[in-house]
Structures are given as C-alpha cells and as structure tokens.
Image 1: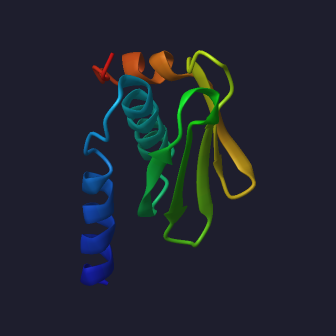
Image 2: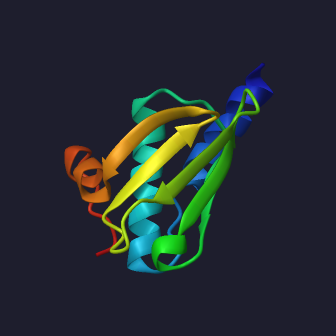
Length: 106
C-alpha cells in the first residue's frame, strides 16, 4: 500500500518537469492541473508529443484508464482532456493556468 502511494506521488511530481517549448509545456501544465482538480490518480504522467494542431498528451491512471489530451484549436489555445471514455475538460489552456496560478511557459 505504501509503495503504491509513493509511486503515485513520484509520477505526479515527475509530471511537473518542463518538457521544452511554450505550447507543449503550457498544455502539459494545464493537463496536470485538471487531473489534480478532478482527483484523478495518475500512474503514468501524461507525456506530450507533437507540434501545432498535432500536439497530444497520453498517460495512464492507476485504474489502467488512458489519459488523453488533444488540442482542439490550430493556435493551441484550447484542448480536450479524456480519462478513458469520459471527457473531463474541454476549453482554454490559459483558463486552467490562470485559475490555478500556474505561470506557464509563454
């Protein structure tokens, strides 16, 4: 039990590491903030890859559900976040960063 909690904490801390590029970093920060707000237990922190409209983040919950975030605008301003089949957020990246006091990379 303690090992599971310790590993889950490490994944969440690792998720906060910057990954390079303002757009990719802002999306990753926003995804992690929403997951924490929603109380999603993260096994594998979402890893983001791609550029522009093809930017996507994928991770996994402790219940083996896939976490997927995809941009929904060409300018990178909004995204959808799904946990399994459930849409847990759809909206602006900046709104998430603002409400959580996250500075972001831009």
